[in-house]
Image (cartoon, rainbow, N blue to C red; front, side, top):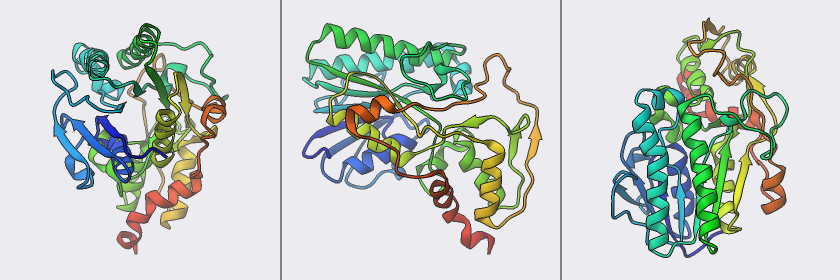
Length: 311
């Protein structure tokens, strides 16, 4: 557990960022910086200091002990709407935050990368395997990893850990609701089904994801900072479930019997990540981290919001 530190979370009012900021504020002084694109201060506890600003700004509040850099345009569609802006936010914003943190004496940075660069894999993906870049979003996250390697090599005392997240979810009873159409499919499916609507499933629904609850992601981020890790680490469960299985489990938990609405996938097969699965051995060996929330328990937590709605 990290205690008595000054902490900055960029993207700190967003889904993962606010969960992290709220967790860390119990024993630390936490600043959540967010430009309001996908975040809202309503996600934050009162003890978290909120600053509305962009990671592209000068004079960021980087006089801290630890920076968690989560700010990003965080999906394919979001990035492709304006690739130049995506590159500025995801790459230049990362560089600006790290440079200002270094100038202010911060020596620990943990940042968000992505598991999408593994491509489609049904077997667990270790960090050392070859990766691929098929979208601007993936390219921007790969660029972060390369710049992080430079920073780490150039500044000997700097700790930099890149975390490759696997399909993070929480449901609309948490900070994920504000993401709307960019929320995880579990959250979207559950909300539709709880209100009697069929979930929209791309293709045949047999694509799989390593769904990882946000609470486990938060614990992994804290462990990465506490151990001052360097390099790249996966945060995922090592188990993958199909979208059809998600629908089945949601029906069971909600007490509904709703069939999905299968639609043509608008994303080309050439770039669509059909399957993901994490090998988190490296993170476990470095810190002892392992996921604590089973998929079934995660589904129960997502659905708890709706039991009064469907009775």
